[in-house]
Length: 412
Image (cartoon, rainbow, N blue to C red; front, side, top):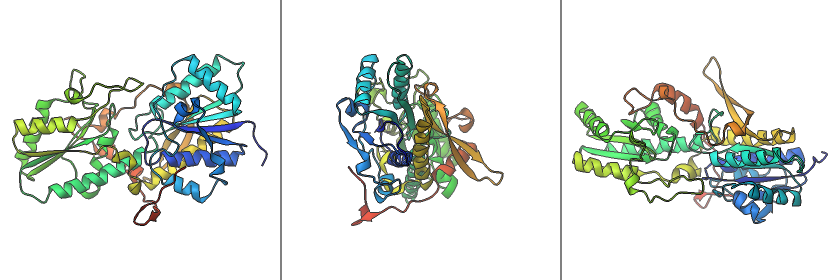
């Protein structure tokens, strides 16, 4: 195969997931198939690239299909390391271009969420106003368990996180059902601005018949009094002595303030995002004070994004596919694009996706929220239509390799 001009560089950014390395494997495989002479990996994203901390990926992966790529695909976390580095103006972009020139980079792939797409958009914009610079194709490859990127049906990593939440929610329901004591269990699930992950808690009920009685998303203003009324109403139904409620970490009151804001540190990251924590614990104390029954809160926390032992086969397959497709976009000369999923549903209800390029500038800094028709009229649950959207994304199990009783992982 004839070599294409220039080399490729790949980075990962933002919060890791159990599928982000499958996307990395897809990009690497695509670059190997395309015939790039060298394929570089940024250690800790743009932050590492600025320090010259890069590795030669082709030395680890000699062929588009090799054992290391397969193992990488089933390894959670971000194998290259991650960062939350913001491109703060033309000075940073100019420094990056010096590095691109040094390593003869013609294609730049950045795997990440909303903030990562902002970085791709900024570099693309810098290139457009400096046509004298060497041509670099900037391609964003989506990743986020939050499923909040616009112009794509869903995001890689979300399906596996949703599968974990549905499975753990079913197990929590089983645990709660063994006693006849009146009790409330509040499960706090990740989701700052969009409630897709919390909505996925409904799948335990959809599949097994056991699921949370109440689900609260940040798309609907949260009322403490209505929450207490909802609990009392569930107890009055007398269907069971226990109630399980799923709540997004980002639930806010009508005034826009986070419910747990009094318990938050107030610290922010480089993009101005507040560090969230404590919604479940806050509501636990509220229930204890106002209702007086047995109550506990469960914060699922980072296992939602790193549970590699319970990944969705659909998610892993699609994550690899979108990485490979992103490579083809760059090779064909595209830039300022993000690879995105388009869903197709057959007359028989079958599900499939294709990958298309979308303008990354129309994606960066925008949020795809759970649509209101996916939320019930009371604002304390989700609809069957929502469950039907979610279900295909969690299907299938992967053949996880084990070593001495625990999953085997790839590392550089």
